[in-house]
Image (tube, rainbow, N blue to C red; front, side):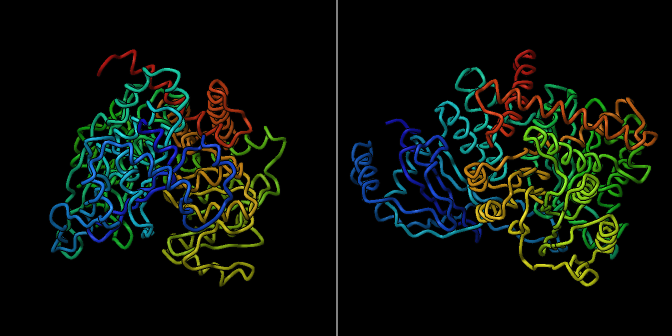
Length: 590
């Protein structure tokens, strides 16, 4: 029996590997095309154990395998938790280094036989006890064995890059029917998944006390088949190469789906701007730019804002770039935007999310007015989402931060949004909001997804919605989820939402407003500062409508109904990939 058929017949299995004090759980589950999946009730907690009949079936398969009796005896006595060290432990920098936290754990070993085949057989003989951990590699079998080989190759090459592997699985799953129809796309996908250039460098800087610190910087030029790179810079302690690759891959698809011919990039550092002085942030940004300026330019790569990087940081980066390059050619997605002190790029991203959900509701003969909306995050994009929801008569009721979430049953208004901005600017807790508005409440160590809502806007961080959160959303009445952040749902959460027929607006489509605003300014099609708000919104709405229609058409061409929860997600990836694939084919093997 071939590898993928074995996986499709087996129940979920778990591989727990302990590395550097953390445990990784490899979960191999059924494909969505499994007939029994549709009849499985939505339940929280752990996956069910295999029945006696299923155990017998797997044992029969094992009996016919090529393993020797000695190997089977070893696998029966092998414990579930396999402790194995990979290299020496990472030592903290004596100067209080905040960086270099990117030592990743390896979750899979390379086997002589198929990785998934051998692991499924071995794990069936292991004890039923497992340790539930936070980080999960969730491997799903696909309809096409050819498509499955792409994921298997990515797992073997970069098994420790959890976020990137997850984004690859989502894309390949969406492209299953495309690859099944034309195997030529397998080679193109394999080339696409290897970035054109990956920069990893140290960023030394000196704090106000004269002490030296070293962080790690990243910039990934993922693909430039369509044009020069565009993509964000993220400053966050969790930043690593896996996240840079996943963000760059998503940005490549997002830019390909936009009305412009652009490549995709992403990068950043594990530097944390929180708690740093203005001078410390400036010195870090200047040191960061010293390493990457030679790779930037309007015909190469122009970075933009991302988490932890705003107008202040972009100004410091641009100033150092101008100083090093000796000229002022182009900018970082629009100089006039940043030097004016107000970034319409983030405004366009937040507004674009609301425009996109309006298009979805219009096809359902509904409107957004009066709908309860749960929003996560409390950054610039979140605030712009709140603004536009209020403008169209919706009722946004939640925001959140790293410590918990705030709910206001009366809904937010413009005055309350201004108050929220003041709280964030002063680096205070959202808890202070409830001291002023009695009908609001702040919940510590909680997420807003259990609040009753019609539409959800996750605008926080990747994988912020897990399986239990998805169940809460379904039970709270959510019918549409708009991805304001990149990859906000875990694979298990996506399965729950699809089964409950919750429509998902993917980030590569709904979040493309920032790309549109940046290119409008850069191409001098308009001076955004001289435009009226109506003109700006009209241009943005037109672009979002084009993106929406492209995603639906691609979904329809490959047999997905408009009402299907998979239509927009799969259609957006299909449309973007086919655009990139055509350019890569035309340009040859480069």
